[in-house]
Length: 401
Figure 1 (cartoon, rainbow, N blue to C red):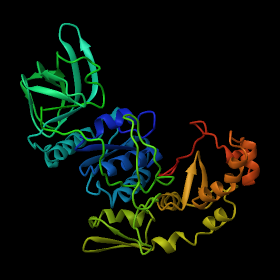
Figure 2: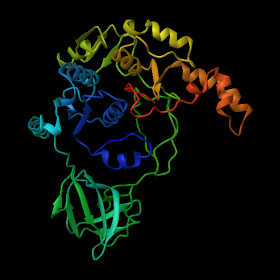
Figure 3: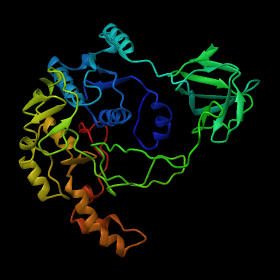
Figure 4: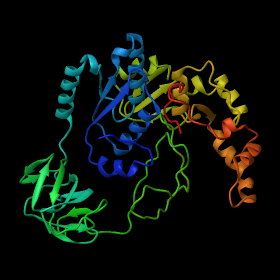
């Protein structure tokens, strides 16, 4: 399934992505690693998906040098994440090139991906509910935790509405039973579509205890453009209470402390040939469960363009003379944010909030773009960036707003 991160599609994505065991990550050899690629990978990292395959499409539309460059870029980005061991297969679908290699790689991916766990406690989160004439209510979802069988009685949670499973289908094929990890459709004639709508779980009676309060550990993505807030993905309605630091900021994408040490599995030597060749680090040294990235700070912190950017946060100069690899690294380390093709220094966010706070206080009903421009001493071009036409847009680095 696709894993879009746009807020309009989050509900659909969250309804089905939790049970994904393996992924196919697609990157165009023409466009390279894009903001959408970063978005997809971030979602997979949060889910902890550790099995995958990368497909480099449009391989026939670029020369060998460009294809090698994009592959190195992809391997560098994946090097210390859950997909560090993923194969990369180049394809050109119109010419039929690479399709046999892709099929073979998919077979290997399926063989090395563990089967979904059967814990003897089946649970089906409903993502669709509808009525079929003559059959009654049908619900669909991804089964986790155990096996469901025809004739079994299930109840809704919440609601505790019982219904017997009349029929089961897996990918439109009738089954007497279905195991965890499968997409299933259940015919539940005693329910109405409203009883089993999205967000409802179907479980065995007396096996689960609904709760109104949970404790959770929050993982903040390195590409998050702002601190954690109380906003969440609707529905269901909820209230959040952040414990510990009130607004924890995201950690660096690679590393943590300033010495560039990141707790991770040591990447293979080839993936580490990719980090260096992409210009992101000067060397890679593995030490037990740590990866030491050499030259990360020194290579970027004193960059002359970053100094110019810091001196003009709201009239930022273009990244002239900055390589794609350097700009990618700056964005991943949160030294730079990108909005509709315009690069801003990370410090611009806090500075803008400080300057606009008195404007907001003086104008409780809201303030205009013109008032914001005056407070930030900038122009409309930077105060209200506009998306470029697709034909004129340049590649957007990962981690963009």
